[in-house]
Length: 434
Ligand SMILES: C[S@@+](CC[C@H](N)C(=O)[O-])C[C@H]1O[C@@H](n2cnc3c(N)ncnc32)[C@H](O)[C@@H]1O
Image (cartoon, rainbow, N blue to C red; front, side):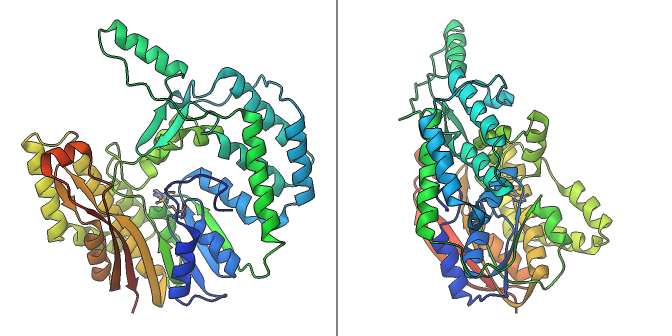
């Protein structure tokens, strides 16, 4: 079921399996994923009967979790009938508009959009249980990119040149005497009806291969909210393992890439801007969260912990050296966006809080696996893996090993031209709480 929704940032289920095995986790033990995404860790834990807690800030994660974690409750016969009805009934058009926000407007062909909303109404009106309703909403969520003029592309949404928005933008550029944008055409834009049938067929196939409910399920919960406030509210010594992957420090903006899905779930423009600020700082638009964190830690009566994490950051020579090097490059005019400096500072400050809290909530003997990528800005390579491991050691974890995969990604063409190609590591950090 991990293939039912395309979440490029997600773990492979095999990776989670292999860590649960490496850490010898058994039913009745509990694993944490503080950046749960589409709940790969929780779902694998469910399959093995291991208890699990996930935290995720994006509301998409909530619907994906509800739809997938209730897979055992689906009536497969009923699902087949719904699929046959969709396949054999020509779609009508709804008068209800897609709840667009500025960034998503014109993302669909007008006819496609009216059909999508018609299916949304039809599914909502079906006499089925809430698990089936969630699954059908999830199916619509999962086809949005395929039926739209957009394509998810790292830091932003790419727009097909057939989209009305691109045509208007190009007309304006030409009128202003500028060159039009280089045309981009998606390989295929699916029609709504076949896209739903395709998604339902895949789900039906996977559920029939699964062959009935799994015997062990354990207890799993997904908490929706920011890790910076949810993790500190959990009790101490709760978890036997952590398996996670935070957002990378790579300017990737989840709220832009998943704008269609967020808008479909009713997130309006204001809510979207506020969600962007709640994400771990990994875009140049993120503002410092220090004041907020200070206030929060004083509210929960743990100011001394706030002070300790801040001191660790301020006294961390390697991090401070990197920040000075970035400032210097900025003064020399080598940096194309000075927001990168505050992003890097915010990213490591917030990750230090998460690492401190992970130590607190782990039991003695717990193992941690964290996947992250190193990054490079204006030629300055930032060894995210070493920095995170060093914070972890300062908070009490024992660093055990680092699995390393060198990759070509992360070297933008401008960086390579100017500073040469350097392999940037993707690492999996393994720590243990003594
Ligand atoms: C690399 S992805 C993790 C994907 C996950 N391993 C999976 O298999 O789906 C990082 C996740 O962290 C989430 N995230 C970012 N900032 C967060 C925050 N402040 N609190 C909780 N989750 C956050 C993002 O929305 C994203 O889903």
